Length: 181
Ligand code: HQG
Image (tube, protein in one colour):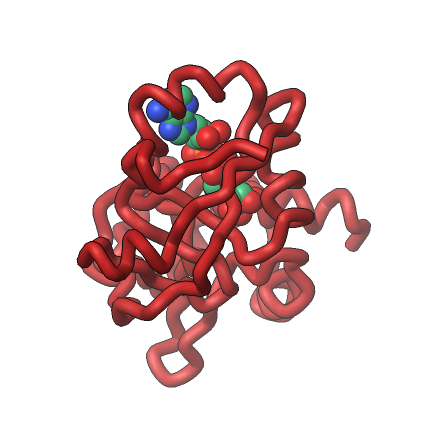
């Protein structure tokens, strides 16, 4: 299978496992998990064809390790990025002193006024390095990087989580904890 086909399947998995499981008629459990056999069967019926071997390969080689497989339960879920309400079950963690958020220049004024909002997702996504934040921002336009005073937020009792694939998550970031570059 070509890389292009694999990316296509990976994007389809993001859609089903993060946003619209109803596309193929599966349900996520309360922690976001879906039975792998059911996922494969219903995806194939929908016209996105792959088998268990391909799925394992996509999960293992995915650039951002977006998906996690639980072999004991034979289930799969997205590790972060959901717009639907599920309980990821990560425990609250102390973040590094500073984290970064990449956005586009066109959102800067609004963010300075209102802080970082989680928008359609369950969390605001932050990264521990500038390079990753830049890539995230580029998806939206000319990138702009905010510094987030994460340790200060933590000391003020705002919670942080780190996803299985290393993305820092928090509910939102009030503007006083932000600084531009
Ligand atoms: C912006 C990708 C105006 C925010 C990435 C962002 C990430 C505001 C956009 C993950 C705002 C939401 C998430 C405010 C926030 N006013 N704009 N007050 N507050 N925004 O896609 O962080 O490839 O939901 O800056 O790598 O870009 O999908 O969030 O630009 O980890 O695995 O609203 O998605 O991962 O956009 O990206 P998104 P994001 P995957």
